[in-house]
Image (cartoon, rainbow, N blue to C red; front, side, top):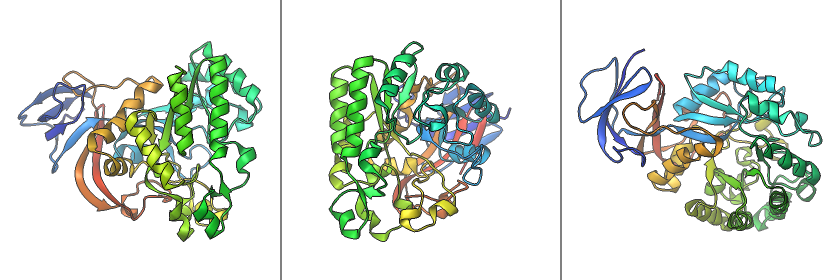
Length: 416
């Protein structure tokens, strides 16, 4: 195993005794063996301008395509994309073909990925085939390695089924995900319901559709107990509901997708399908409320919501195009543009523990799990910055600050 030497790397890790210090870091056999002012030699030397290093990035919502949708993304290229984007671990959504709703499907995914290269934690489906009617084999999937249960972006309409699921997984400390959307309210709408989208003639989803589902889920959680994660918050009132639930002591966490902190529905003036995501882009009032909730810790984590889509499903008229956008490649840059670098890194690393992933600190004799970046580099995000097989990136053409230089996990190094 070749040794890796990081030259003059500024360490950003609040748990490290070397926090905010610029040091040489030597990695041998997958572990950090020396951190000193000067280290002279190694098999591979990384010497980059304004090199910074943090704990490896993590994301709670990543989609690939394999098995079943390899035209969107393969596991192999998806891992390369994640690593080159600074991510060394993430949760993999179950929206595959076949859907990840059995223990054998969970084991298959784990067997396909080289564990020395990246730490992928599969999510299992909550219901069989995402049918919303019959619970999948939740206990068996958790024993096989699933860290939670989620019918990806499909709400559970049956309140009693949701109640039973929460009660059942309590016995083995399982974690349910519930997508915040009441289908009976939103129907087949494509965008947010607001003055602007009404003006351009697109059928809108009212905020009520999200908030009713969250209110219902939290009420049931208060009755049953257990653990619940609500992904993709996108409205101001949704934040208020989460804040109230946490004040009551409910075991609920939540996330917001990066586009909902950056864009408003006014981007839809171009009818460009890259802006078609679910939940839809909301208003400036919602954007500001979400950003404040992130700063205050009411929203626990931010996700890039990486969802590759092939051209046949994305390059269509707006109303016919599929929802979804890439996010891994631009995640650090967007967060570093929205917040200061330390907050961006906190959002990219701290939420691992919510899903039972141990975070190593940057110290001697610790496992190498590192992201490398230059926080001051400014650029326009373009096609050349996309590593994914699909190209449906919502942040294309945006001016961003901060570039990922690569990542180190165990003894593997992916470089940009």
